[in-house]
Every structure is written in structure tokens, then in C-alpha cells.
Image (cartoon, rainbow, N blue to C red; front, side, top):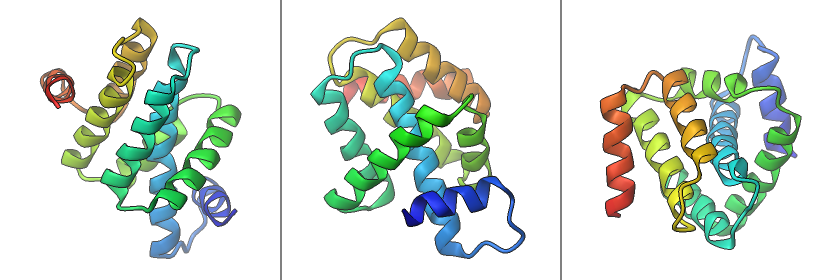
Length: 149
């Protein structure tokens, strides 16, 4: 519930937002983008869900229970979202360029985790890459790293 409050506070543009709230909003935005890939092909495989949790743990340094809670909140936020902008805008504010490329790589890992990259998954990743100002070269490099790993 705290993360949801933080997301609302950040989305509504509160004047004073503490560092913990900013971190929670960033974490929720990252999780939401991974959920977008998870749901893109309309079939959420267990392997994809496991990869989302693994990606969150690796990127955000959260424990298993925190990742599960964050995933549940992200799914709720994605259900309510009208577009990707609210998530990508938060990431653009909060992350350095290298971290944005890492988000794209983790999105590829989610898409590949069920051994099939659906055209809708690739489309979402491509759109997010553009919104995060990740170049095509970096987009392809992230895809190749995800394939190799």
C-alpha cells in the first residue's frame, strides 16, 4: 500500500517527495514495464513471471517477498494505465541512461524466458526503448545480451 501511495504522490506531482518515495515510484515504474512485456502476448507463462521477479531482485536489490508485493502492485497499476508514458516518464526522471538500457535488457529477458518472443512483446520493448531514449544500437545490444545470458 505504501508503494501505491508513493506512486500516486509522484504521479500527481507533489512538491516535496522524499528519497524513499522517489525510490518506490521508480521501482513501481520498472516493475510495470516488465509486467507490460509479461502480458503483451496474452499468455503469462510461469517462466516469464519468475523472470520478472528475478529481474526485479537483480535490478532493485529487493527480497523475494518485496518483489512479489511489487509485482502485484505493478499489475494493478498496469490494469489502470492508459499508456506507457506514466511509467517511462518516471524512469526518465529517476534513472541514468545506462540503467535505462538495463531495463530494456531485462524486458528482453522476460520476453525470451518462455523461449518464444512474440511480435507484441518485441513491439512493447521497441516502444519503451524509444520513450527511454535508448538508441537502436543499444536496443539490439540489449537483445543480444539477453539472448546470450
